[in-house]
Length: 637
Image (tube, rainbow, N blue to C red):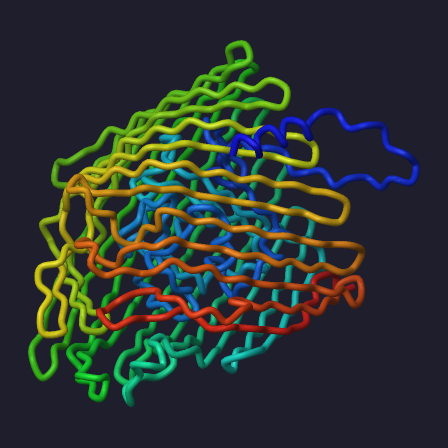
């Protein structure tokens, strides 16, 4: 790391004068120091905000956004598997090793509207078309008090492409495992009114999720079929802007055996209004979400020769929420005040086989009020924040935050401390499930998790290179995790419980370099996460890393990358080991005409087999997956 720092310092000095024959060196994106809460309301933060623009998203292989975001250090789902084959209930985000649960400890916002499932906190990545995203902002840690309990580990904010006059996107691709995708989008602007719509349909037979050495007649491919659509209307006034959006998803999944499958139908109606004045900004957002989740579960016989249906599950839920923000700017300080409200209702009904019914459900009402203030003093900026959340039944939680950032020349330093929490989801309170022969019980007696975090870091920024390093420590109390109750006769029984406290300390680093037609990036995360007992936190790799090299010249683009994970444990007892692994990927695009391009994507380029879970039978990730396609992105008149 010291060598890398010295190299960056030496290279970041003023370059020698260019000769006429020397082409311009591509400049790196500016350092981002603000978190965008809604499309026009943002707040500065004493943290590194990683921003991925549309080119970076398009240049990374993956059907859904989760596979593309895995190149970001510390980003992972509860399990190592892709949303292409994983059960949606395991698709919650972990940042900085703050994992061990299928419920996400990271808030995902789409144009300022929450995307996390109202019932379980996980994310349906199939509803988010990567091609329709203008940019993605990733904030690790709770360095700002603006967000509520779902952002205990950080926030990922997504922003849609703005409407353009007579603009159309069309794409079609296909590849291995009988994969096929069709998508289309259209937008137009009439004066101050914009309209846009998009639809995406995808189907794949998938792949086996257990190794060939143990497969039996019950094993089938795990695959998915889905259709997702969005309709949005915008009013684009000089001071006032407003949008209303409806998005829907229908997906069906095969879960890898003859008798197991799940399906989801959901829809969200949302709207947001904001006004921009010389020194003030106001924003109000509202949304309503309905979700229906169905699943079947089975017991696996010896040698995977037989399978017995154990229960069918139906879990409907709905949520309604609203948020209001006011920002005031002066030459020396900025204030952001606001509040939010969320009401979630859901249940889980299991039709047991051969007979019986198991039911659990409830309602959760939360409201919060917050303030964030920062002031400039000399070369430094000081940050102060506070949030009070009320989670029902007379309980409340106070979340303060404070930080400082200062920069001079090439160097920017930053530090922050914060307190946060996460209330248990309805899924954790009321829904039982099984994965293979591992049964996980619900627990209606769960209490909220609490976190105290601190971080310090620096950024070295030049025209064509940047180095960012952050050291952090997170102390998590009343951890909600899956605690092993028994393990006998080939079956494991666990229950969600508030386990012992856990501490994660580590460091993350990111180095970017641009030169001529090339762009390189190296990312690394070290996260040592342990319970107070000394045991490692399950589903958290101590080390993660990624590297990507991009070449782009004229109408041709190519990129190769690799991501790696060290050993991690499946269970809280640290008896089930998931070895480390690394996978490579490749993507290329050739522009055929101004708006038409051919694409090629290959995931797991070397066809590496790696474990994603133990149930207790081993489960594996996807084999080599390739896709080729055509894409039109441009005006239609």
